[in-house]
Image (cartoon, rainbow, N blue to C red; front, side, top):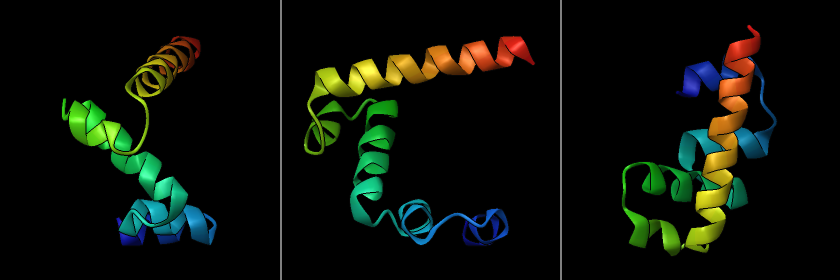
Length: 70
């Protein structure tokens, strides 16, 4: 992951979130990963479950739209 992030030249905050799960972006990433694996109690430590569910659903819809347009 470290090599990939370096090649993509993300800013330091995003790089830290992706590689080390640091910072506020890292908290969001941890919550998302916990939500994806069904660890809802762990996810709820970082964000309200209804917020995570809504954001996750929106992200899936966006992904479907982008994939359909390609």
